[in-house]
Image 1 (tube, one colour):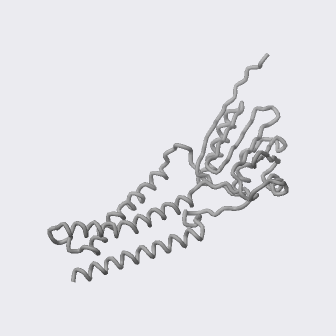
Image 2: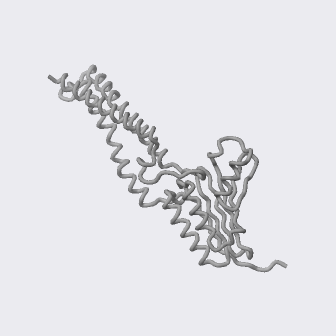
Image 3: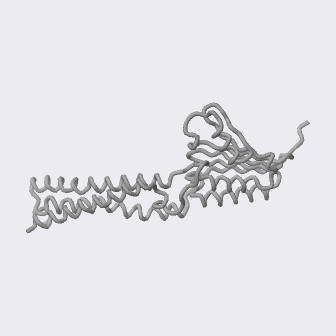
Length: 256
């Protein structure tokens, strides 16, 4: 005969979490509070083999001492499972390079929802957000993005001013229209290139990270970006500004 039971269950998915070794150790310690350490397992799968241990540090050593293939400092999945002996508290966390899936269940609703809230607060502190959740932080980002949209029109006007300044003060002929189109492209191409590479670098800096064997940088996207990305973006900005200064000087000379 099956004994009737009643459990509270919570499942949440988070994206854009940036988790290094320190964050993972704190997350796992927080998650398994109130559960016997002997009932906690941390594991990862590489190729067709799953490696398990009681703690993250033990798992890292276990993988490094194994005959697993590939770069042993590059991980693409990690799992924590913990449950007490009576089964009234159970939690599992599945992590990959895109998202973190949290599942909690137990007969104590206060514990289940309390742990879910604590884990959510921790993951949001690590850059994560609930999947499909529109946050005020995301809405605030739309304002500077909208302002960046003004760069291409401004660049086109500057290109026209440099290549065909006469079209800005006289009736346009067919030749003027062609020159104006040339100026638009001359100004637009470097601006679009700058925006495209800039967005790519920012997106890389804000991407989800799973790095169990190392610590990761914190702070704004600029501090999180790699040195190579910073150098590339700085060089591109300098080159683009120099190009627009040269265009403006050319336009001034043509108007004389």
